Amino acid sequence: MGTIIQAQQRDNKERIQRWDRFERADLFEQYRELRTQGISERQAAKELKVPRTTLQAWRLWHDTLDICPPVAEFFQSGPGLAFLHRLVIAFHLACVEVGACGIRIVCLFLNLTGLDRFVAASYGAQQHVNYETIARIPGCSQPVFIV
Image (cartoon, rainbow, N blue to C red; front, top):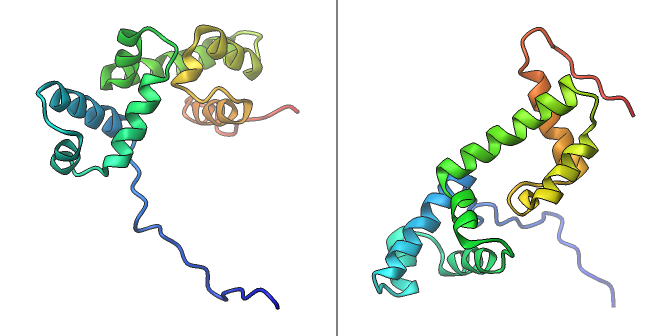
């Protein structure tokens, strides 16, 4: 018996909710505050309008970080994320654009410092960051990649 393949694939884009990192950090902080007040997970999910399983996934990710809890809380907060973004961009500018380092050194730096728990440290992800950084430098219209 043959397999039936639907001509038009179903998508559930309307069901998938995505939060940017700042919104996620804010919602997770509110969730933790509600939980410390004794509010159940279900009630917190309803109040924040976030699926309970999403909150559970965020909590599980946070609880499995092998890093000092106050450091994890800082990097998941709005100011922590802003600092982290500024640090990564500054490292790209100082080491890749001005210095003689490459993107692999940025990846190594993120891995050695443990920041890879909060920032994508793969070469491809950091290449994208570097491309966006170069594109925003005045007078540098076209980034050039040497392979």
